[in-house]
Image: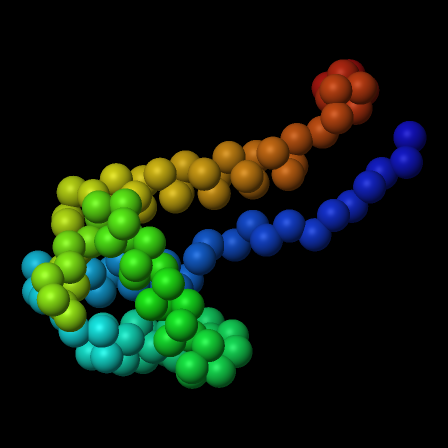
Length: 117
């Protein structure tokens, strides 16, 4: 049987992790200070891909998605995370990541029986 390998992005979304970590505090943030905090944390992790302007757009897009899903409140030009919704999001993302990893490492049905013999 021919094996087919595929590349899959299985790693965590560092940008979303850092964004939600900053928003877990009970403070209101304007976008620029929020961006600078997330950008600084991503630089510490050496997890920045692309330029600063591209990252600014990605963060803004993710932030607006969180607002639309009711996970982040928006008042004028300020944003604040809703702690319970952020916790539920983190749990759901972790579960999805684990499931993707399990799907990747599962052997095809025929190979499972021969591997257990």
